[in-house]
Structures are given as C-alpha cells and as structure tokens.
Image (cartoon, rainbow, N blue to C red):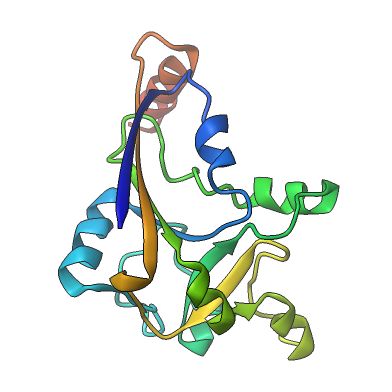
Length: 176
C-alpha cells in the first residue's frame, strides 16, 4: 500500500489532490481514525453507531443501515449533475484548517465488484433514508487493508492571519 502525504495551508488549492481521486473509489476518515483502522486491519461498517464518524452521524443512513462501509465512488465522469452532488459532500470537508487532517483510502479495482451502488436506494424505494446520489456507494461488511491500494494523508494548516482564520476566531469569540 502506497502512502502519500500532503501538507497544505488553507489558502492553497487541493485541485491536484482532488484530481488524483477521479475515476477511483475511496473512503475518507479523520487522521486519528486512520490509526485505529491500521490497528484493526480493516475499515469497519458502523451499523451500530459505536464508531466515531467523519461526516456526521446519521441513524438513518442507507448504507449504514445495511451494514456497509460508505465510500465515495468517483468512477463516473463528472457532468454538471455529478459535480453538484460532489460539492454537497466534498471529501475534503473534514480536513478543516488547523485540524488533525484526513486519510483518503483508495480501494483496489478488485473491490469494485462488491460495491452496492447508490441506485439500490431508488430500487428499494428507501427514500426516507439518507444517501448522496451519484457520489456515495457502499461496501458490504469490512474492507481489509489488503484491499487498499493507496492512502493519501492530508493536513491543512491554518494561516492565523488569513481572512478565514480571523472569521473563525470572531465566530468562536461570539459563542463564548
């Protein structure tokens, strides 16, 4: 498994990292959770809700309710509709400036045959459950580390003098 590390400031573009994901299937987790995945030897589904989450917890997630690991599926070329849904659930959202960073775990092509597509949600008429159309897929059961081709570790450092950092501090001061 190849591990690539990127360190960026909040002003720097992530376009090159995002381009590495085109045509691929991957799981995103916070950097501290990556260590737990290495220790366990697998990415585990969170069907019982006991594991910490990266994109927020939902008891009504389509793939979680079926014992799947939620993954990003970027195999389809990004037309206007797909780009819109990708922006709604951008894989770099949890890589906030000043945070601990994220790990993007890119799956081997050999796992693709096991994937449950988001369209299963429509087929089952499970419209009350949450799914990200055109972007999300599920892997039934755990994904062993042997099925991970590449890991991208991304850390975004905060520039304390940036406008966004000043706005975050002002918002935080207002809360206290």
